[in-house]
Amino acid sequence: MNVLVTGSSRGIGRAIAVRLARPGGTVVVNYLQNDAMAEETAEMVRAAGAEAVVVQGNVRDEKDLKRMAGTLDRYDALVHNAAIGVLKPWDTIRANQWDLTLESSVRPFWLLTKHVGDRLVDGGSIVGLSSLGSRRHVPGYAAMGAAKGALEALTRQLAFELAPRKIRVNTVCGGLVNTDALKYFPDREKLVETTNQYTPLGRIGEPDDIAKAVELLLMPQASWITGQILVADGGWSLL
Image (cartoon, rainbow, N blue to C red):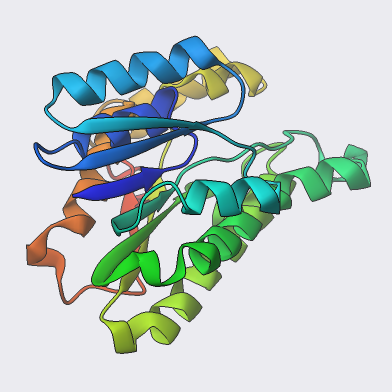
């Protein structure tokens, strides 16, 4: 399987890249600025039996997206993981911070898919990454929630538009996951403690929990699933 995973030098993106590594396949590891972390991911991909190609690129830059899309002649899957955003109350967000958030999430979901074009094989798959802030209030999550909500809407639109090529488009909507991003949330310790307490499965998520959900959507057994938002949150959203 040939797959491109944006933002895969660490965290959830890294877990996805490693989990999708298959002997005979190639994983394109995209990163923004940390060369060493990207190469670590590539080595993990190679250890799993796949080839790895490391590509630096800013998903907000269309030239970088075009270059990234041209890395391989053929893709079986495209995973839109990269996202940069601001965590601030809605009335303190600056316009440039709002633009940054949407330009790093929903815009590349559309634009990179467009530039990959026919390199994505008929019958291939596209997966986006969202979060529960797209549908529930999270303090300081106005911009990110809007971006993720838009990504979920675009998932449904692209699923319909790409269906004639049997390309499936789905998104994984994750709950609270133990990544570096947690340090930017206010009252991090309280948030983690509360989530552990009230999540039916008893814990916050790990990056590999989301990676497994992405893998699930790429399996042949999911061949009749498209345009869907798969929630992976340990049952927290049931409350």
